[in-house]
Length: 93
Ligand SMILES: [Zn+2]
Image (cartoon, rainbow, N blue to C red; front, side, top):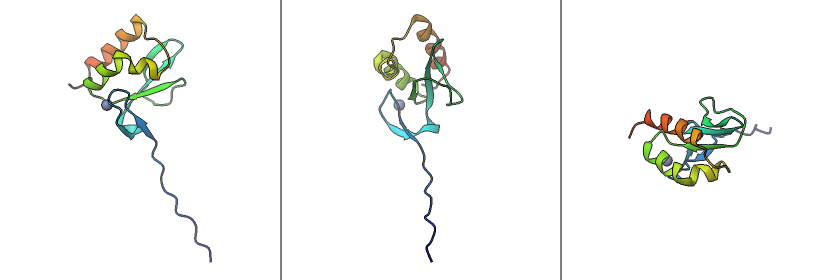
């Protein structure tokens, strides 16, 4: 008798664009590029190019220096930066 193959659960892995650490998607904050601008994606399902970040200010600061823009293949506008700075201010140091 042929045994059924055991299914291993696949957990998507993502890289924090701040510190380049790879970990499971659910532990990271998703940032998404939409036609309206770059924003936080709490659902993790928004359409558009996404990037992932820890909920740590140090990672955000590093990402905002350029990694995030290149990960999203866009330039961050004034508005984007304001929005991201607001999210960042709600994070822990
Ligand atoms: Zn990080």
